[in-house]
Image 1 (cartoon, rainbow, N blue to C red):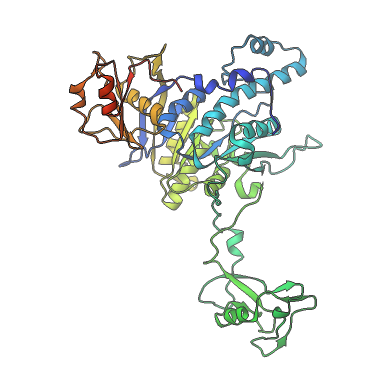
Image 2: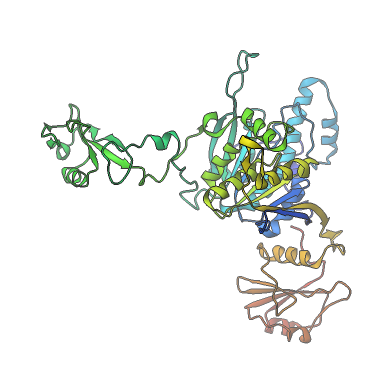
Length: 523
């Protein structure tokens, strides 16, 4: 498999392991009357830190990820920290020696920025999950190789071409009218049907008619003949008008005669309004579950950039966000890749289109999809969250008024790291430390706290985990503590400050001990 190398790669390949776990501090909750946040989150902060902070609760649980990262066209300023401190990077990125040197440096910087974020996104994706990444020609070639390395080339699904414009740019002889959406699965073999069929609507549904008042409802017809010669499919048919006919020259009937007779008796064949035509087989709208899609998504189907700009302006009062994506585009992705209870993550949230699409879809089908948005810029509250508030509550006036979807979300800021110089941060509340410890041991979100056992974190795979921690005093693992344990398990992992049990007692009771905090591993 081809690999991609760039200056600084050696510094970022494992950088996601060095990113500290931080807390997520809830600032407020916004919800429709009588509702809660629905598990929806908008997080303000660098998405590298935010993605790491999400791992304890969401690793392996996100069904669909959509991201629209910086396209690296060379025209925008860099806001994402590439976290590369190698002197070669600093020197090289600081050199602006003509356009060629500037162009080369920005590709390396973009790759340094994307690599650790994609690593964390891959961890958050569920086994049957799928990631969609928007990109243009600036980095699509690099992105494909990068994703092959992180997700595995065997998990590549397809690259969508989205027609983003409605007409060519008259100022250019050849104008660009498309972008890409590259798709990877977490495990392409875990489910043969990674994607849902799309519901038939619009022109597709309008093709179904009912000229004969069939009680089964509207239908479309397909050719009852097939190319070639098969002796057992060369029988004579008598039409409802009494006309006898054989297959046209060079063709045979599509089905055996017994199948034909069955379809005829069920009224599933159409011979034309006069009953004299070559038979055609009916397919009913009520039986048509849906349709698949191909890799060419037109602006008429999923929207375009002008539509997206008008959409955000209608919600926020003016066009205050550059290059948003149309809600219809994200709707298509959600239709393909989510179920009614899926978790959807967008770590380059921008104007909040992904949340808008999730809320719309939940309203349409009664689903309970949850969104997690991450936006590092200062407009996370004033634009991203504000748009979501207005979508929930409704926006516009008069004939242009759009009813609210209802729902809610909670808004978070990144908090302090859980560990400082390898020690527990005393400023972090105990509940968050407990979640972190349980996650480091099990890679699972911590269950609800036990009402009977204060220090029990949870039971996973027949092993019980205890965190015997008191902020203001040292704790001791001894026989007195063992008498407080009520949970039956095959083995016990117990965190405490001091262990007074003998080796024989540890073996007898199947106990492993870890000292607070030195043995809490950084992941």
